[in-house]
Image (cartoon, rainbow, N blue to C red; front, side, top):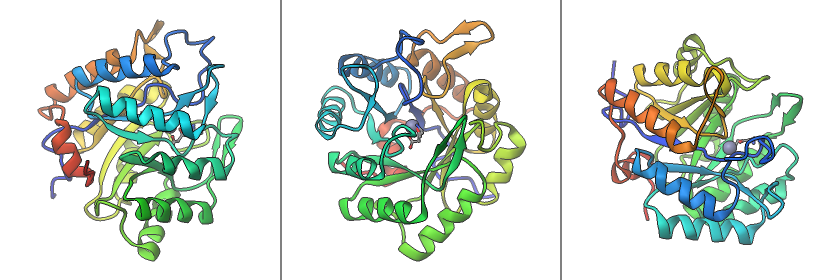
Length: 279
Ligand code: KMH
Ligand code: ZN
């Protein structure tokens, strides 16, 4: 079969913070700008090329404050060579208007979830009209989307979006398969393979497994030409009974396994080409 785009090497994205873990439960979670920049530098050093960013306020709670988002993009650009992807998913409680406004921080890339999904005890809302607004907002601003897929039907929505509203900024389609969320698709190799059959032609993909799905999905992604997303947004346990020390520990493990799979971490320049991200 045709190799997937960029599949001679591996894009490693780090998702260091997320919106779900409380700093009080996970004291080593990066929540300040200094902590985020330090983590980003460490992760870049061991093989990450992109960072998926959720930020926190002074109170350590998730925020979509535009000024803070702009400062974060600027600091990450100044201090690292990483591709900066802001989350438009935010926290499950964030209003649509705030999530759309994230685009005004002008990141290189932004996440764009392809449908509503039960999310543990909560609901992560993504109405069709909202998805269209996000997609168009990114087209207008030249921001490259990463389409987040939590369940198989969301890939059908991605086809509908591209058919009706055309290709994203940058002209490439990149999908992140987020598995193992309670309410979404399970984190196992069989489900990953089922998802791949539904990808748009020529699309690249990364995969992530939440919690204990982390390693099985990482290995399945490596063996199917996919890319990787790892980080404390998705996993705070490194092994049974062992907490993650820091994000770089997860990136280093992913990079090591990617090398063993003969698909070493892609340098940022190649990832920019792969995703159609300029600078
Ligand atoms: N925090 C989740 C509700 C994204 O970043 O785009 C949504 C999420 C997806 O993390
Ligand atoms: Zn996220």
